[in-house]
Amino acid sequence: MKDKLMLMIPGPTPVPESVLSALGRHPMGHRSADFSKIMAQVLTDLKWLHQTTNDVLVLTASGTGTMEASIVNFLSPGDRVLVCCNGKFAERWADMCDAFGLAAERISAPWGKALDPEAVRAALEADTTKQIKAVIITHSETSTGVINDLESISRHIKAHGTALSVVDAVTSLGAASVPIDEWELDVVASASQKGYMMPPGLGFVSVSAKAWDAYKVAKLPKFYLDLGKYRAEAIQNTTPFTPAINLVFGLQVALEMMKQEGLEAIFARHHRHKIATRAAIRALGLSLYAQDDAVASPAITAVVTAPVEAEKLRSYLRQRFDIALAGGQDELEGKIVRIGHLGFVCDRDILTAISALEAVLPELGHTAFTPGAGVSAACKVLTAS
Ligand SMILES: *Cc1c(COP(=O)(O)O)cnc(C)c1O
Image (cartoon, rainbow, N blue to C red; front, side):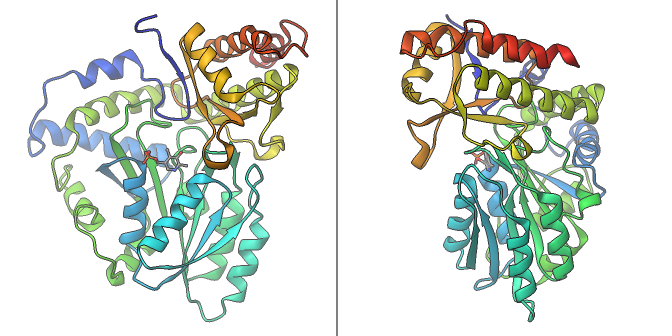
């Protein structure tokens, strides 16, 4: 049905009406006092969301642009870096390091499993001459639905002393607590179309004092993504280049909504949606790609659809119910579907997605569950709190 599409993918995510309305305002000059007033509020609220007093800079870029900014500003050609790899986005980081001529060493865990913080600790402890300049870690791995133990890994990075932590928090920021100051995270990248209840187009990078020290000696070339320029302009509550001004209007409203809800309530809602979804999937006789509940991402649940064909399932849901789920990437293509429960998602959305799933599974030949079992399992979780 026209205009009925329900996005249950891990980005872009649904956008509230009030944010959409704010986007439709007439643009204003980004050197104007009016814009600086909005930007001042946005920068303050971003620090609140990031739980930090560090700089949080606003770029007009997708998440990958913020990943690139996190590399080129703090590293030099040939620098040794550790890349924690357990999924598609982590691989993107490793490929990016290769592209910039860094000596990237991969620490891997199988897809669907979390990284072992001890492996990171061992690699860092072996580096007695302090050659490792950064450890790159994807906090919530969107391709598999696994969340890594960032707190422990960050502790090992601090013990090393030299290496910066470079964190992809694209699907954890706004879904799970990422206490930047408490965990002493150096560089944290995220993007508007994930946990921010916003359309794509803005990227965010949080930078610690230690990372700014590294910036001073970093030699990789940069221009548009030179964060020093963004920092200098942020002091004047503006940006070095024309930002996506209307997205900033929307962001102001989205952050206000987040403050109204409160950080703890936001994280609790994502947690509830995660366990409700996982309970429902199990009750429907399907399996979870990330089997260990302790490492399941609060933003996204990957479902192994066998014996049902994943792409057929997605297309049925899309055609019959106007619900979009994400498919698998790379080696997981055709094997899994990914249910996003990130950002502007409420209990009703979870129940809708689960009931639609229940409705189409028998048509696709999967009948090994009691009708109503998925919805019932989800309800049990959603009404318990
Ligand atoms: C979405 C995402 C990105 C960024 O992707 P863009 O398409 O460039 O916005 C990076 N890392 C993770 C973990 C993501 O989920």
